[in-house]
Image 1: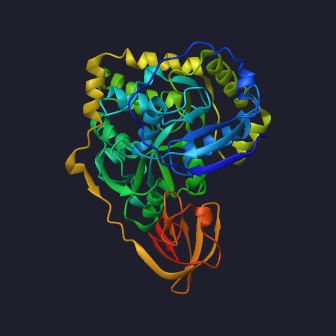
Image 2: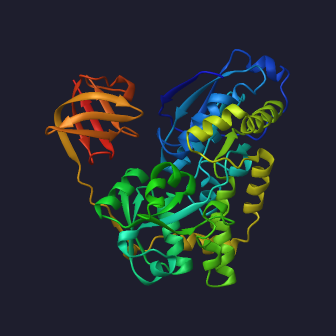
Image 3: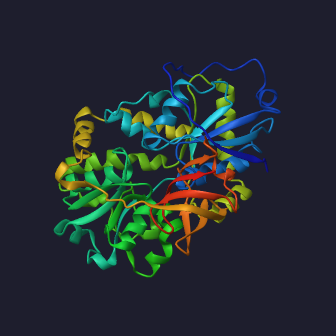
Length: 423
């Protein structure tokens, strides 16, 4: 198993971009031998994309000729569009950089988002899972079926970016199925939304994958505290076969076709790419290594331990799917674009109350969780995406040590830490 190093980077995509390059003169094994590859993830540490990326990184180097080491680098921003732009325009095109980009990239481009890439020109390596997305509600809201969500308003929490699936799914559910979701946007993460649900600030959440539900709130689902209202995939997931499928809620054939387009991204749920212009023989080797990794018992054990399901598809299958989406009639794409626009009357900003613990002593940092005491009470806060300053300089979370005295801004116990400033 190859060692994996982790860092959070900042990079800006620039103009440019090439198509697939010819085979290189140097053998694939000779090129990768002794090399260190970058595997980028388009989100902050924590969450589904990051968990899948780290799981892949631990094993894929064993299956690439030459057995390179793998470094995981996070490049969050614009719901994954920042990384996609980097991979298209600025990434090293030798085959030394690959990425787990968001599955929304193709649909974002087709819906007219200002993207800095052409998804058709990526070298798609494969996808680790086919997603099933959902909308859920707290049972205490009294809304426990999708029919009830069509009859009564339900406040659903969402993260900040307008291209986030937590906003998009709620918007197209309202437009195409008649639900009455009111979007409360601005939460730092889906974990924060679940905590807001516990506090009664919101009653539900849309656009969260079944895999993420299993990782975050499976106990509450089993206890009946959280109910799944609808699944928004291409076919029913056998794990939740009794939950209605969004396609069956369409009010007419045209709307069903629009829904099929909008949920098509989930077929390529956790996709990986090499940049345009990468040598063809190295792309072929990376594709083969990806699928071998998917069948590696060690990788499967890692995925099981991380509680991420697997239903992989090949790079060619992803590439064919992208081609199919780009062949969709313009009238359907335009209707889909209209359906994902959030009605201003159905959206509001979350009223986040940030707390600041002045001169708090850090108890420790464990799995991205910061432990400290505020007002005599022990507190844990999530460091994913947190701004950290140590002695006046930007720092990573591994710079935070037990005993350090810091000012900590956070949403609440178990919730996000917005800023940590230490002397």
